Length: 473
Image (cartoon, rainbow, N blue to C red; front, side, top):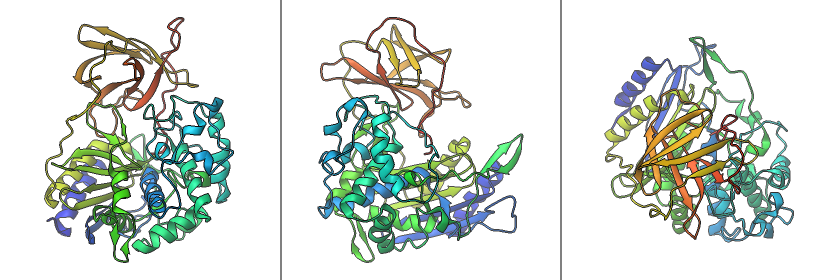
């Protein structure tokens, strides 16, 4: 079991090697936080302001795990139904072109399978008005392009969580942030966790740092909009998040009793969607699932944006977990992973196994053809050459080798940009095929980004253009 001194040594080594101003880490078991350390500064502009275990940081997309937990709790009490169509609660909810509106459920929304294209988190409508969640949930689905039908393909969507959050507040008859505070944060003792930027600024805050020409500078930008509260706008501390993680590996129990139904919590931790990478990474309800360790899968989430990064990891096989937060960007992903693995190994976690254990069987035909991202104009041209798959996009072509059923991969360049940048957890360019019930390839995912087969295989393909990911993570 790692103690605070050993934990601090790992953190100090990471900071020194990679010019990271501040890092906070908390480990936990089912009873709650264990060792907690905070090293360095919250801001290079305030070197005398130390990083502390109770320093607030924005958790970005780890917010999705918080939201999913609230909704699973509500489902356990019969307030919501994970498999009831959303239109039963939101009669004005419509998908663009009414493409499967009546079939969309909370389960689809929380597992990124509602069909929305991956969306960047925009900041129009910045402010604190809690009504912005409902406004976005009704207005944006009808104008957001679809990449597939409900349940057909994994497509990371912040909008999906906005809609799910509004379903929760309508059924719970409370504003979303009040529901979360009363039903999750307060019972767990998450005293500094908030979805309100005006509340967050009353505490010491971790600041975003970006590298500009070799010098670290603060990114002085708010990046806030109330509509994103269910998907990416929450502030917390490593100690608060450790309490949250402890409840999950304790099967829904906390100091005040049973907070979430164990059966439904298992639903959140169960794979619902396959990201179709060279590694066996799945998505549950608000949680990434994988790797296995050794008999049970780890689960958690990452959150990051332009100069801030955090991660929650739960290792049920070992009964331990970890929360990490620092004030640098996703460019340091792999060094962080190495530091985190060192800590988890000291806590007793087994060797991580990313091998794909299941997958779709090889189909009758290869995924040759043209695939596109709706609205963006971005496309892929796929051609098989022997046992290799040639992938052309953004004026570049790579040859990928088969690594699993309907999955191809090749080593990734360390500085690759989307769509060639490897997905979190992987170090390869990965392409996975999704087949329809008839066995034909209807979609492919390149590093987790979905493309649908072009209906007509005529004309030219635009292989240059915007290939942005899912925005704030």
